Picture 1 (spheres, rainbow, N blue to C red):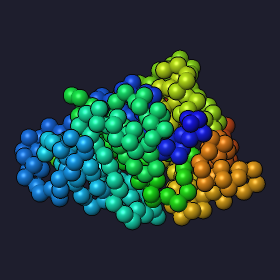
Picture 2 (picture 1 turned 60 degrees about the vertical axis):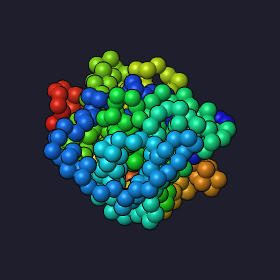
Picture 3 (picture 1 turned 60 degrees about the horizontal axis):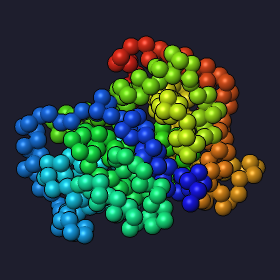
Picture 4 (picture 1 turned 30 degrees about the vertical axis):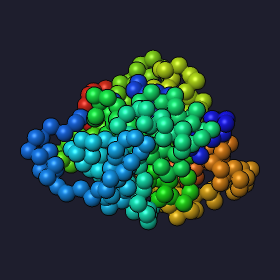
Amino acid sequence: MNILNSFVRASIAGFLIGATLVAPGCLGDRSSSTGPTDGQAMNRLLAEPLNSQPWQFGQANGTVISTQHYRIYTTIRDPLYQRLITRVLEAAYARAAANNPKARVSDLMDCYVFADRNQWELFTRLKTGADAEMYLPITAGGYARNGLFVGYDIPSQREITLSVIAHEAWHQYSWFAFKDRLPSWLEEGLATQNEAITWQGSEPQFDPAQNLRRWQSLRSAIQEKRLWSIRDLTTTHAGRVIKMSQKHVDAYYAQLWSLTLFLQQSKYNTGLQELLADAASGKLTQSLAGTGVTAYEISSFSERWNSVAGPTYLRRYIAKDVDALQREYEAWAREFTSTWPPKASVR
């Protein structure tokens, strides 16, 4: 299968993670996310009941855990880890729902989190068939495909695994909550907002701006004059980017992260919110009338759809003057990367 033509059908993020983990790709690293450290809170969390039933995957004993919004199939046996996974997923859902009040998810969403990579590879081969070659190059983490999240525990890096789960939780939510798909630049930009996790007791907190890995990549791109133009960011996608140098890949994701931050805290947020509301209600693709994009290309989320929809939605909802937006974003990015931690904060 041609990866370039199927990147969105496979839920954009999955292949990107494979191409770039654990070097910054589709998630933060340990410098962007910290694990829970409150022992008393963890003991209280362990004492809480878990709605679970036995589950079997091949020879591996597992558990299926039901929460308010998720059905989590896992072979991870650590009861605390299981509870942390449920906490991160539900916190990511709550954040997405609060930020997108017109979006709705009616059914439980299915997630698979395996205890090791071998189990994950086997499941991927069984579930995706000939498409498995799109996902097996993933070196650590997971992917989202057609509304299903499939990941595995990264050995000795629990906080990174939880960051992957939070990132993919956005893609899963977006798949079910929005009637119209978002273009790659915005879909990924919003997913990166879940990467930086801190903990208050047993409750995960998201602080998108405090993502050190992305911040460092953005600063390097600015200093070395490697910034992508917004025009290029909105027309491209991962299948093209992953063939470039690692520095270009890092800059691409750092800019998607930072551009989304900038839009959310600037005058452009009104247009961004209108775009998301229209995606939720199914009005977004009306903007593609007269562009030549066919109904089939829209329904199949083709590469051509993405290359047209990305800049079209930007101009329609956010900024008709893209050059002015570019200047404002670059000025903001330079100030944003002048000190760590940055001053910006988006919850």
